[in-house]
Length: 117
Image 1 (cartoon, rainbow, N blue to C red):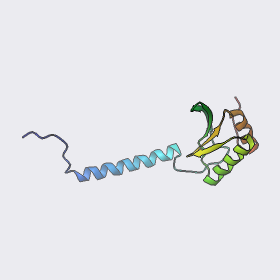
Image 2 (tube, rainbow, N blue to C red; image 1 turned 180 degrees about the horizontal axis):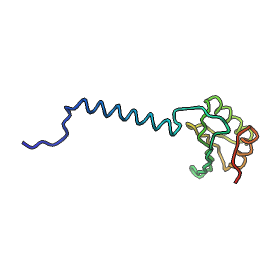
Image 3 (tube, helix red, strand yellow; image 1 turned 180 degrees about the vertical axis):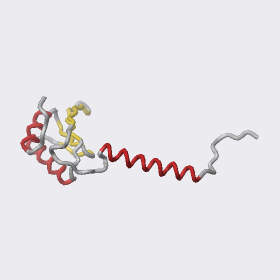
Image 4 (cartoon, rainbow, N blue to C red; image 1 turned 30 degrees about the vertical axis):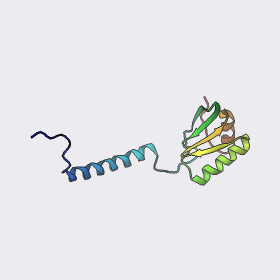
């Protein structure tokens, strides 16, 4: 008799596979720093990207690994100094407009370090 499909009687294999995937996710979290570890201002390697959304410019600054309160305070500082709107998305701060140079100036005056090119 010919049968199509998988044999689902192997519960042991399925449980073992689930455990292995959980372990692999934990290992990758440690290396990618997505485990919400807090790091110092001087250690951050911020990435600036520029996008247009519905025809309007947006500057993304990111991967801030700091407390939520610190992120909100930093966003509030940037919005007040730059005179524009912005929001938080995970570890990224989104600022309305093309303001990369001004953001760098504000962050440097606030104690953040950047490499000069």
